[in-house]
Image 1: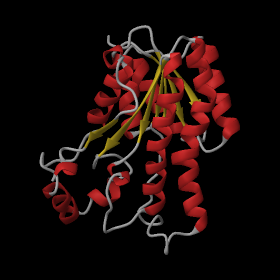
Image 2: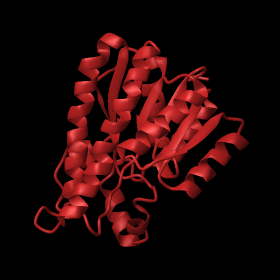
Image 3: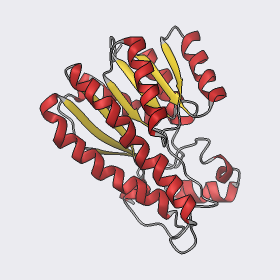
Image 4: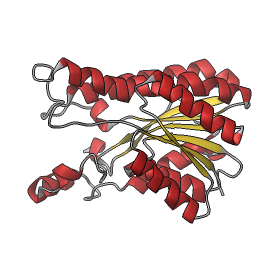
Length: 253
C-alpha cells in the first residue's frame, strides 16, 4: 500500500504502460483518475481495476485538446476531491509516418507534438494548481531513450517531442519545489506495448533489437509502472528533476 490515501491521474490509461500503471497504482492503494481518448480501452481498464477492488473514474479526453483535458481533470478532481500524482503517459509513435525531417509531413509533426508535448503541458496546466492546493505531490512524465541518443532509423517528431519533455520536466521540478511538488521523467527502452506490436511481429527485427539489450529481452509495461510507482511514492520524497532510464541496459552498451 505504497500509495495509500493518494489520488493519481494517469493519461494514456487505456492500454499498455498506462493501463498497467492504473492496475499497479490501485493495487498499492491509490484512487485512479484514468484518462484516454479511446472509450472502449478506457472502459476495459476501469473494469479491470474495479474487478480487483480498486477505485477508479474513467474520463475520456484527447490530451492534445485543452478543453477536453480541463474537463477530465475537473471531473476527476471533483469526484475524489483530491489530487496527489500526475502521470503523463499518453503518447504516440508512428514509425510509418514519423521519419526524418525531410520525409515527415507537417501535419504528422504537429500531431505528434500536440499529443506528446502539448498534452503534458495541458495536463500540468490544470493539475499543478490542485497539487499546490493539496500541499504538494508528484509529476511523472514519460520520455524515451530516443531523446537521449540518435538512431539510424529516424522518428524525428517523436524524438524532438520527448527531448523537449525533458526540459519541461526539469523546469517544473525547479519552479514548484517550493510547493513540495516533485517532477521526474522516465525514459523507457524497448517495451512490449501496442505501439511496438507491429514491429515485434518481425522475428528477425525483434531478435536483432534484443541482441542490443544486455538483459536480452524487451521491457514489459509493468517494468515501467514499477519505476513510476517509486517516483510517485513517498520513498522518492528527495528525488526531483531526475531522468530515470529503464531500458535493460541498452544505453550503457
